[in-house]
Image 1 (cartoon, rainbow, N blue to C red):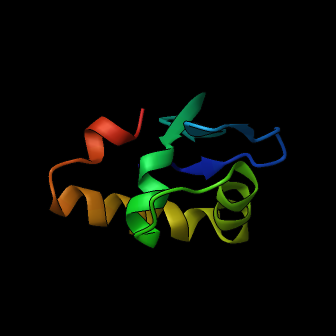
Image 2 (cartoon, rainbow, N blue to C red; image 1 turned 180 degrees about the vertical axis):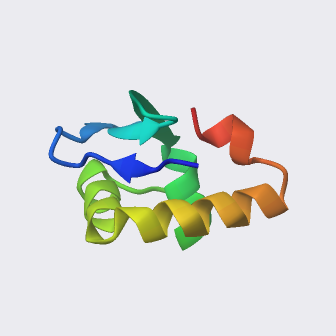
Image 3 (cartoon, rainbow, N blue to C red; image 1 turned 30 degrees about the vertical axis):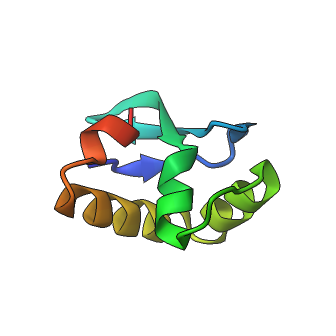
Amino acid sequence: MIQELTLDAPVRLDPDFLEFTGSLDGRRQVFRVDAGVFRELLQVRRIGEASMKNLFMADAEHFLLVATRKLASRGQAARRFN
């Protein structure tokens, strides 16, 4: 589980993913969330970079918790979160 999000570091956006920096086991690491996670949660076919950033930045910890639980229930979490 990510212990600390360091959102003061720039969040990197790409049409296919969103990257952010977090701390895991005391080490800062870069994490990537596949754009499919956003589409799955919102049940839409497409989502733009600005929409992904707004959804993530509104409450990043809550977003990650909800996304992980939903995808884990389908056995997809490991594939979508790097």
